[in-house]
Length: 189
Image (cartoon, rainbow, N blue to C red; front, side, top):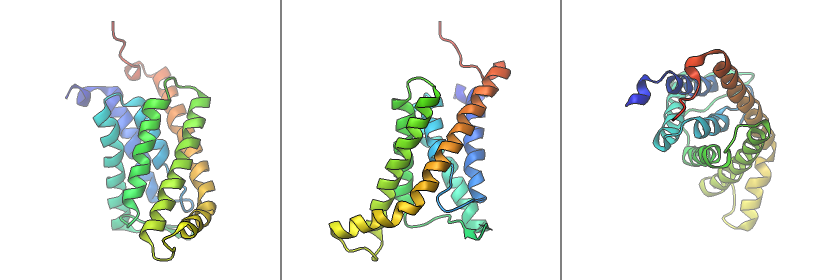
């Protein structure tokens, strides 16, 4: 429970929650911070249960707010709870693992690489989920390929948003660490 008194931990959790709530104001379909949040949590939250729990909790809160408000921005209505949630959350958990396992050191290249890998995995997982969940696709290889083909227009938004939000989250927190000593990692002697 000492994490709950740690300013660094609380700031990281606050950033994750703020980014998740920003989903209420969509720019375009699949232009969301969820994968960046997951990578960020995986990298910065060293406690495994928190690194998995905090982004999921933030997503649930934002999904609930979206469900209640059903906002429409730029002609696009966001979705709160929907049938694809298990696939979205699974892809998000994979991105947490990418942040915790693949990013051993924080570099621009590692953030870009993790964002790209997360976006590709999200595309593969969620379009597989579409194939499983929706009757519009035949349940054969042809139907699976069609689900991936239909998802291509959304992939660009996923990739661009993950890159942009990752840059904002990692860059912003790196700057904050530089100017606010209380956010520096605790050095173990």
